[in-house]
Image (tube, rainbow, N blue to C red; front, side, top):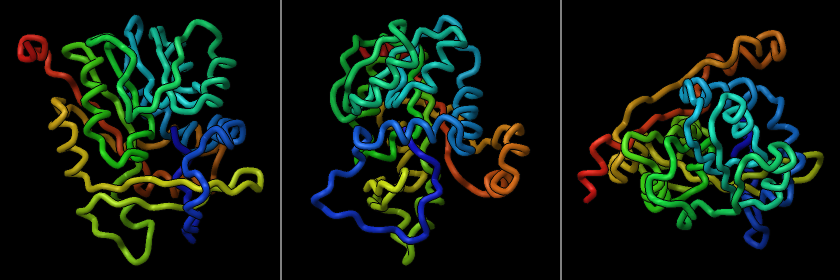
Length: 257
């Protein structure tokens, strides 16, 4: 669950007394922008759906589902979708969108997932992992709820973007946080993400027992060229997000016994 990476050039440090990443406080405004903007609607979601491929009949967990836009697209393609998110207000918006046909749960991805081992064929994590300082416990839980041969399809802020967004440059090889303000309808909201190098991402996947299958840097939907003529060229020629497919080895059932 993420907004476009059009982070302001001036990164305003948020007051410690203000809760960061509080999606409950700006869920409606975020959801409205996410629905139609260039980076989410015409780049990130199409990229996730292209990687997911034919999902008809597949049991998919949308980890960090937000207001349900990706869940709806997967459901419309025939998947059996379950959504989890830490924001109760975002889940209320998802319920309004999805009706009663999609199970939704308030879950912090740092905690244990309320599902049985091997419950899902796929997990999608759309722009959520970069909110976590430590990927280890979350990836271990995602692996647990995936069946052998199951896939985690994830998108994150590109590590090059996270590295170059601040001046002076941070230590690329270190996992560090950065805090800035988003503005929605005149409301400033403090956000905190965690940057890490590419090798730390791939190491986290393999340490959790996944096998790296795909690393992707897709192009935006060509339809965006006419809709966003000024922004399309910039998005199609610069780094933005990084996409992964990692898999639970098919032999995982026997090796875990």
